[in-house]
Image 1 (cartoon, rainbow, N blue to C red):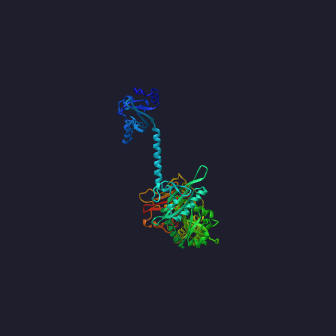
Image 2 (image 1 turned 90 degrees about the vertical axis):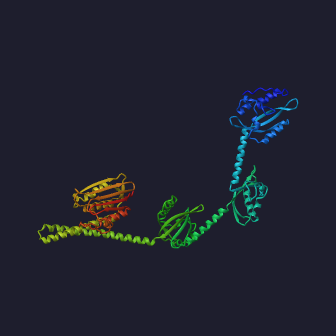
Image 3 (image 1 turned 180 degrees about the vertical axis):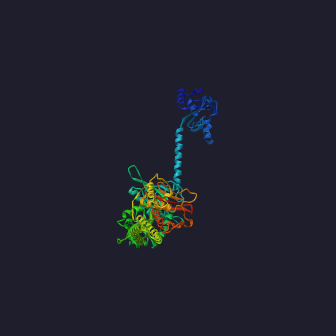
Length: 614
């Protein structure tokens, strides 16, 4: 941009002026501050054309960025014919701020009067912005240091404070400088404090320690102290940086925690009814009560700090550790923990079973696990006796069923031969009665035999083909009375595959279908009796439904139908109240559920839900 030509005083060297105007930002104003000349560089920094500037008042000399005092000093200086130098700031026409290092020189006429003013500028905007950022960063750092919960000092080897981040002991930062840090602590603390600082300087390592002192009212105050040595270029310690953190509140909380922990420890140590063992997260025993001492035979001093595995039987140790890990993982995942059984070992080598519940807690930063145990030796003995008795009963049932089956079969054969002979009406009536008794006895022996086989024979879990199992049952029951009068509808939806004990499932189906056939009835208004068998499976379970339109069961008697030898029908159908009892026990053994809905004259609907054993 070309500047407006201006005729300068003849006294000035033209070559000098040309060099100045070409390389600098220049303006010339009259005695009243009106612009008479600007060069292209001045126009560029103001983002304005020279034609619009000439004749206007010099805005730079009355910028709102400066106080009136600055301008009074400026005008007083140049009016007296003296040169003025300083930094002036303003905004360009487009709103951009700028800073100029300014030198204003009065131009004197022959009468020695200042008639014009030559201003030479240097653009220092970038430097000024950097300085502002540095000042802001410095201010931010100072604010941060003041807000820090730490008092940070730089001290000499002898404890003289060279610098500090904020006031300490009600003393301002400036007043702390050149005083001795030790003077702000009682004489009793001096030696301990100095020893730790000297240790850091001698070892040339950062050192951490705690100390306490008493304030003006005699209350104890605690500090956590970190000392870090500072080195010169050749590695000599010349000073140290000390960070002091007041931890009085933390100490108070810690003391309360210790007191609480001590109270709880006293409580569970006094309990001698059960066995309580506490271990850390590494499995080492940290506490136990009198009950544990009596059960395991170890004195407290002998066991504290040792691993939990000391209390486990060698034979079952691997399984016990697996059970413990599972329980711990469930606790960590905030899941419910089942009661766990474990075989333990006393100090004299005696093995005994325990049942325990595991819980966890946290003290400070440390986790712990508490096992509350119960010696179940007596209960296990009773359970084993019960198992032996149950086995004896199962064996007795099995032998009785087979011992009864042969005589009844023989009696049935003899009655068949007698029926071929001509006999009197009285004898024929007697034979019919004997025939009924023999058939009833034979059915009982067969029911007992079937039930004993289910109870004694232990089969493996297999995939159940419900369609085939139902077909096999229907073939087996084909000869039953009333079978031909019944319409059977089978609907099996088995998309997922169900696994369980094949013989037990078959027994359930056989008994439910057999009962539906036995208690069916051709009632008026019905073309025929029906039995609907439905099976649905999913990934978790199987639902078995057997529904009929038979004689039904009175609602008041429904809760008794699963009792041993109970018979709910009033129609003199043969039976012994054994089938549904065994079905109920099988369902319970498989951890399933059985429900029945029925009323007299409206048939019955049995629904069984069994979990998938895969």
